[in-house]
Length: 512
Ligand code: UN1
Image (cartoon, rainbow, N blue to C red):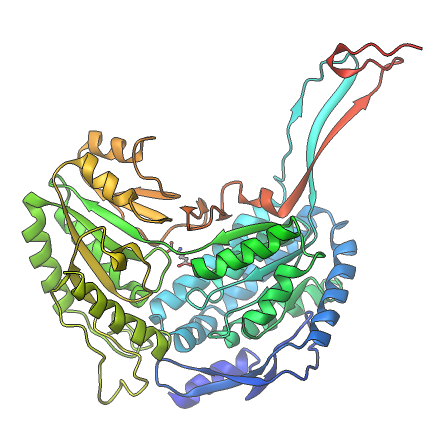
């Protein structure tokens, strides 16, 4: 399987040592340090990437700003045609890219494929969208005047992405930004630099083959300092950042200082309410995948279960039994449900959280532990666990990127909704009920305060057709579907006078 992985890397254009800076087909030399991508699957260094230095960044921005001047004049449907070709290329590379994502960040192979499928889906969405970048027309109050608004390309879009969806989140941003006429500079997580390289190798030849210049798809690599260049750069009107709330606050403040726009996709603390009127089969399966999928490292992961007291014991028993059947191990082996955490830091955060929540009074139902022995050499595999807790506990209020599920109890639906909302984050939420009144109450103005609210579905696994994002400390941004494209464009209101007079708005008289 070592040879198989080597072949995958080769097909994706990844060498032992790689430049981390690219304007498309051109790879820019840098004096930055090389850093290794370590697989949490087996603890092996997969390959090394050179960090971007200031001169290489300058080169990228020179190319990107020049490319924008050309790309913005290409008709949007022609830009869509390029994205259509990118979607085809992703289809051709689906297994390889899914395998690399799984190996580099540790999600199951099925989820790796699912992530590439999200990329393909957003390509298709963006292609259609390229013919639908609509503005409105409105009636002018002045005679023989026409008024409308239109959307123009915005400029260079900076993208900062996280390790957990190392390729999909980039594509949600870039595919829309590209059909909107923007050019993109991507700073991927330093924990998943190779998945980003692979994407660049897939898209760059397509821009070149279609005769478009370097600079439309740019890549820079390194730690948060490289990301700061994007946040501080006045030439970048929009920075889209996915990651922790801590990071998001810094990015938001830096971008706001120069009055730029930011699109933030930050932490979640997602809950499922399980009503006594739930379909229990669906409730348990939804909670299980939501809590342990991607080893609890999705921003949409189910972190809290708010269970009605009349079904609490039943839910608890069934969940504990289901957790007992989880196969933990190499995520590339399809018999395993749960792979590793991203690194040892994440493992220590998992252990610390368990300790702290116990000190607050939490009761751990499944002993938390780090798996040892053959197959677990990386030290990143942990036992998914369930903790009986209370909503106000400090640890329950925080997002720990690990498979820790808090069980909470409620009596009335009002109380359950209040608990669901009583956390700093506001990304995803769900209710399991067959009672229409309960479902509608949950979705009403007095219901869930999250950007995503589901009925009889878990909190994760959103489709790209709907805008994705959340409120409060989640950052307020919306990516992917619906009308999220508007953030990647600048809006202009146009009024045209075709009369022989110059009537003023608001009926103002100004005669000389
Ligand atoms: C994320 O964890 O950053 O809804 C994104 C989901 C996926 C995306 C998650 N479609 O779980």
